[in-house]
Image 1 (tube, rainbow, N blue to C red):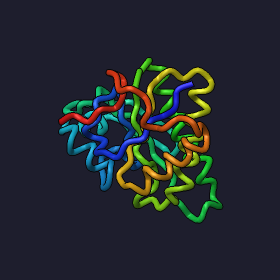
Image 2 (image 1 turned 90 degrees about the vertical axis):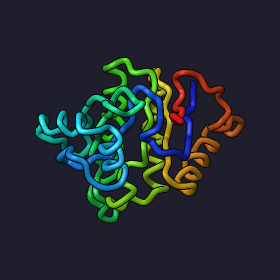
Image 3 (image 1 turned 120 degrees about the vertical axis):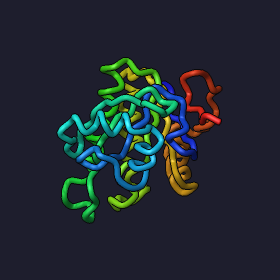
Image 4 (image 1 turned 30 degrees about the vertical axis):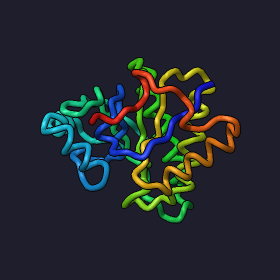
Length: 188
């Protein structure tokens, strides 16, 4: 079974079938990765998103990639963290499952995830990484066929994912796989 890959990069530069946007419920762009994706994609993405009534937390919606190297953007709305006692873990897990369902439904061969809900939504990065890794591994174990990359903004986030991968497959590195056309490659 393949392992997800981990990279520290600007997700807007990755050449994959889809990047995931940690969106707000209006899908109109905002700060953090959401704003960066909207800026890099150009006005077409916002125009397409404006034709949609929004997205509830834990769901996912596929839109075009426009000026991005990625062909598509999968928008998902993560939970705002309130101490972990209000179902945040279940909503975050649902985000990953919903995105992976979109990947399977549209026969996408590669997808890159940012760290969902760990910015202004305040989810602890290590806990969020564990949920993300668990959901992706379950999907891959059940026959999910796309190459999955966790695209991190910080070295600390990279370290969380690498530790999870090492614990799961101690004899493989998250960086061992040979790059091919389905791996997340930054566009220069």
